Length: 218
Image (cartoon, rainbow, N blue to C red; front, side, top):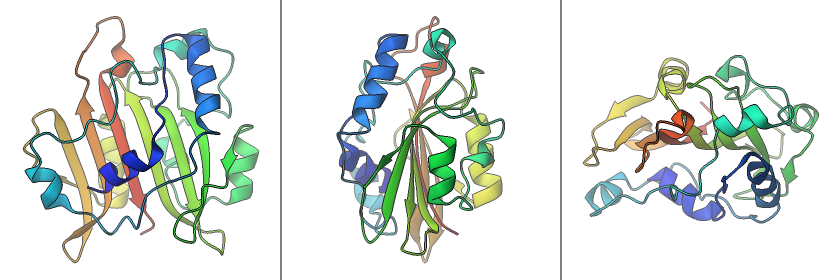
């Protein structure tokens, strides 16, 4: 799957054990990974579906948490009142640099330049926390958006990718995963994976779901 390719390329998850740990992990992670996915159109869905166990995106101990943000100073970059503010293809490198004070630049892949930022959209259960990367072409147009993180309720994100970007639910042999894809000539070009956390803790409602999204420019 597209997501598996991206997940394996990222390499360093966000380790969150406390509020301060979230920030230390996020900041160090942005400087440690310089490799990202191959062409997102090259997705082997059948191979992933036939695997005995789909690759999990996170270790349960290594997920970002929205709960921790309640103890943090203001988020780096203002929160998104609407997810479409950040999951859109109208931004420029300058827009990314002006919105987030901490940006990792230089994630080159397939003639694209990546700009990675920490994203925490708020503290409601349907908000998101994790890593967001924009990939720009040589004309400074966003070609690919990748997000990896957690949420307490994926409904808002699912609604956005279905209504705005045309992703559709797909059958999957993994009962713990919801899969949404947009296909072109039978091949996925955009994909969202939503997984139920292996351990769901009542005290950590914001980490009930692990989400990973790869959106290719329409």
